[in-house]
Image 1 (cartoon, rainbow, N blue to C red):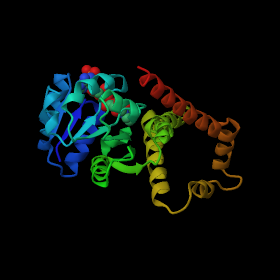
Image 2 (image 1 turned 180 degrees about the vertical axis):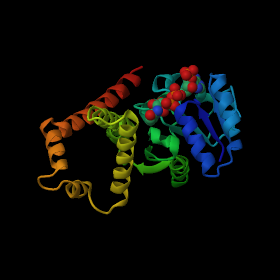
Image 3 (image 1 turned 45 degrees about the horizontal axis):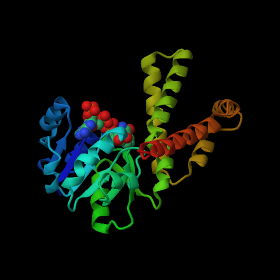
Image 4 (image 1 turned 90 degrees about the vertical axis):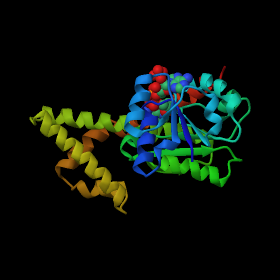
Length: 269
Ligand SMILES: NC(=O)c1ccc[n+]([C@@H]2O[C@H](COP(=O)([O-])OP(=O)(O)OC[C@H]3O[C@@H](n4cnc5c(N)ncnc54)[C@H](OP(=O)(O)O)[C@@H]3O)[C@@H](O)[C@H]2O)c1
């Protein structure tokens, strides 16, 4: 499998790193990015091929569009005359398949993906959506690339991408926000910044792992820590009184609405 990355930024780097860790021969990966420093670093670290032309993409079976959403239209327009039988994988947030296909001059062998940043340590989760006529071979190729950086989930309907963006795409930021708040609370309660940071991080990592590995639901796991009349009960009560659950729902809804609006704006050219 030859894979060409257009855009060699954070997400491309994460996926290339995951592929290498999974034993993929990175000599079959090429990267095109105007930032020569970024390209040099990718070449040194992963031994990928570098390219500065869209024309040679004709030799690749898979092209991963890993530029910013606002850069995607220009990239597609430059790419469209080099396409023959490749699978296009777009990881750009918000941009819909119908718009990518339009910019590619009607070429629509496209899989749209929403990864997330824990991909950097192969602990990501990616949602994928394929145009209806994409066959199983191509679906499996796309899934195997994203599986190199974490779990994969196929969506039945592209409109679900806005919800995915709100939950797992933006989700790491909510988690970091929660950890930050817990760290600050620890300091206010008299812990050193180092001790508070360590306790907050390890608690989050341990509780997440327990939730992932345990057959018990998160509601039950929470109830198990919350003894009647105890300290946790007081903490949860304060969270409930502050409407934190509602605030998290509002955050996800706001992110989903933004994703929908971005798709409209980016496709309105
Ligand atoms: N990071 C996330 O959490 C996340 C999660 C899900 C999806 N995504 C999606 O992943 C995509 C990439 O994100 P990222 O964080 O990796 O962005 P990034 O670090 O900015 O990487 C994008 C790279 O593409 C380069 N580029 C710009 N125009 C180009 C062109 N015409 N041809 C080739 N390369 C070009 C950019 O160069 P310059 O810097 O010089 O412009 C930059 O190096 C985005 O569409 C984003 O929506 C990101």
